[in-house]
Image 1: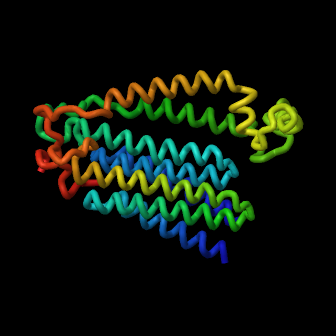
Image 2: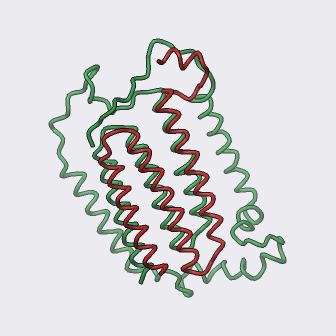
Image 3: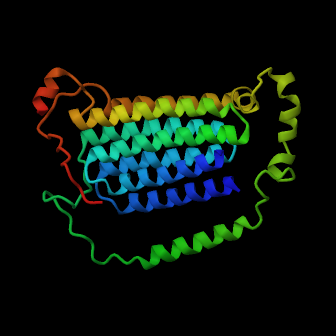
Length: 94
Length: 200
């Protein structure tokens, strides 16, 4: 059962990787990276149960947090073109 | 069995990602692929039972360096030089791949030759397990009182070394903040907007 799940997760990772490689728009790539991170979290969780060492679950949680931060940073860059987010800056860019 | 399958698949994904990084010109996509790359290698570390290394790889590789590279991209251009019209470089036509290919091939062969002598993964008789590891395993708890052996070695036995490393990391952090952090007035160079499409 865990084996079937991990194979399915690996296949999904492959699909997300394909989208990140070919993705025509920026948002495709961001979504693909986000999804890849989620799949990594799931894979680690499944591995934790597969190998019986449930302390790996903490790492899965940390990955989820890091993935979130990275995606937020990427989206902020794409929408505002910089990280110095003042209202004035944004108006100037647009 | 399933471990081997996961290992092989993750390594194949790593190879695909690195080749794609080499061949792309859109720097934003390359940063995104860097994120995928370090998530993959962190997953491999977890599969190989090195969760603390995986922690570091995920935090530094997928987290901090992605943000830093994106911040750098925000200050510079998001395309490789020579791709857009202004100050274009001529593609060097005298680029011969044979010398680097030969160097890489020879180095790779030497490395593969070197792996024949490496003891098997997790071998209890490997040199790494037989010299000082036993001392740390037996004496860590009574010496330092730290339950995790890796932490004990890093923070207690090698505390002075770690202090130096922290100083280096702090200096690097200050330098990075000076370079790409902080507020700066927008001068003439506008950041080019990344178009809706790119070629992969």
